[in-house]
Image 1 (cartoon, rainbow, N blue to C red):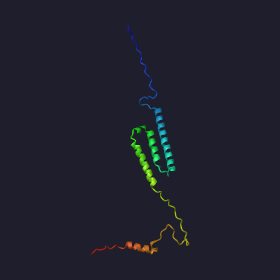
Image 2: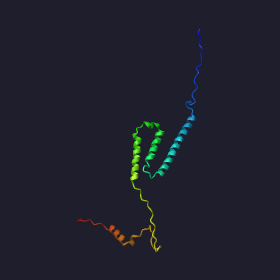
Image 3: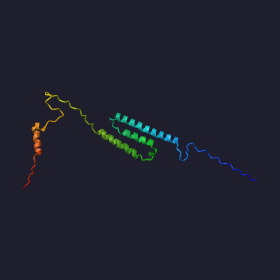
Length: 160
């Protein structure tokens, strides 16, 4: 005599990370938002540091090479698959930044324009202001130059 017993198979309970199709997962949404906020915070702090370093290191000979190296390091930290990219890409970026620094270092600083002191006149009300130009009629040479420009130009060697 054989006895067959029917037993219900026991299923493992679903994992806590499983969500039914069509349902929303609040934990994953909160985790994604937190991850994006942390990423935004890292980028913001880097930008603040970069602005501070640029202001403090504006006179250093490698003022763009260091921030470029920091950006490359940040990119390699945030995007791990970049490790598989050839080293020529970051080395080229660093070389280009260093070349730019050399050009900036060799270029002379522009002269600072300082305003000239305005001369004081003896007859203060009769003299025109310093920034105002005088009329051409007051200068005979200017009148003559204007007349020469307005005179018709005769062609040399033109026969009628």
